[in-house]
Length: 139
Image: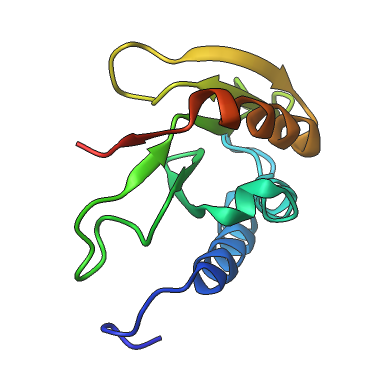
């Protein structure tokens, strides 16, 4: 994709799925971040979350209402006040998806809503939070 070309919602989701496949291939099963991004991203894309631009921050799937704020020409975006993190808790632990209400790494601290081994269940929980929490402006 050209650097100055507009970043469409479809482009963002296609890129996120490609990144998930690549990240999972590199991680393997011995990492504290299990290879489950490839499971989570398609589940989110098949849900109403597909109306948001996805991005990851470390091992957290997050959403904004426009192209990512770090892209050329993007001024203001609003972030969905909820996200899904994924990890194994410990080396060789069981993969877990955690649904958070609120914005991670910001005050007030987000609230853990659900921890589940099922990506679709995690996505459904975040979708259920979306109407209640909406979006917040990026700082």
